[in-house]
Length: 158
View 1 (cartoon, helix red, strand yellow):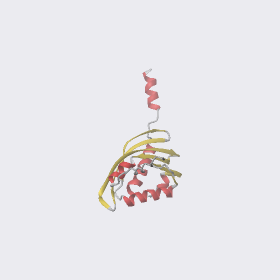
View 2 (cartoon, helix red, strand yellow):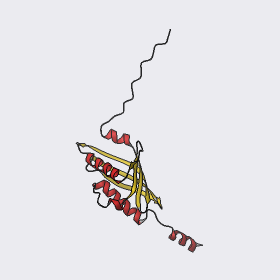
View 3 (cartoon, one colour):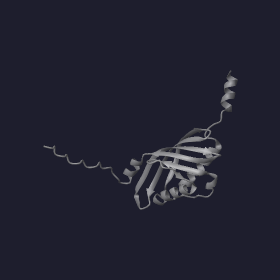
View 4 (cartoon, one colour):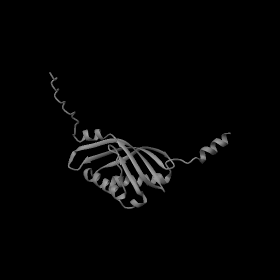
């Protein structure tokens, strides 16, 4: 019985796989450096980036490049670090944290955490679904939420 358990555990693949790990590291390197060299080995041609708050997909490698470039233009020292990851054959859940400083105001420093679900196809990233606390980041940049003013009560009809 013990031999069967050891055999079964030893034969189960471990996730993330080495290929998933390497692909994810290259992907994060693109975010952290803005260097797109070798991107075609990382992203599937039909790649989609779906992020909070609106969850509208940015489709394709060029859209991804534009998103990363825009982020790095606004936050030149943008850095994402993996805190934890786990998954299965074709997907990973990635818990991450970021730090970043505004390009136009170095007193504004952002810190935050989020989670991404990354799907793989043919050992490349097919899509990333990202969720984070956008309100926290807006507050760190000095924005506040103000409720709308109440409309004056209408006089009761006589």
